[in-house]
Length: 163
Length: 72
Image (cartoon, rainbow over all chains, first blue to last red; front, side, top):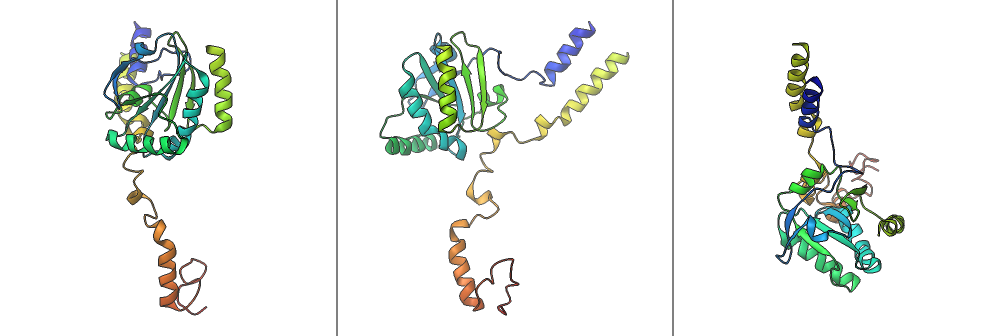
């Protein structure tokens, strides 16, 4: 009884954060183009869930790197970029500027979560936050902060291991 | 009774938890606005420095190095 009570208290205090080894949290969100996606939509694929916003300078810095990453990693790997911008227009306008700069169309799904419920559920400790999720839906790496070119190289190795 | 007291105390103090008081990184949308920065007119600082230079008839009057009195 005592153990159960302590567990209930620990849970209510939010002592169990979402981290490596825990199951990816379910979601049901619409993309910037209006199509609905859930975590199940990416079942059987290695996923990099990225929480970002157009007002976050670190998020903007790493975005062109994600374009290249998605292009280079093939079909069994999907980047799922979740924007927490209030207005989807802000995210769209930023992505258009990246499209122009890179000469590519956004090569991954961009979901809109204005209520920030997913960031809250993941208890994101920084912006941007990225979660590398394996084919079984288990979080294998939590990356807080923006990734530079060298970090992406390391990340590629991790993705290849999971593929 | 002892355990109940501990649990009740923990639940009460959870209201003071840093997670509740702290502004989380994903909630900093308004803080990220230019007008919220310490120097919101950063782009204009060069022009402002130039105007100050003319007004004070002295270089460096706008910095903390000099007093800004124009008596350099």
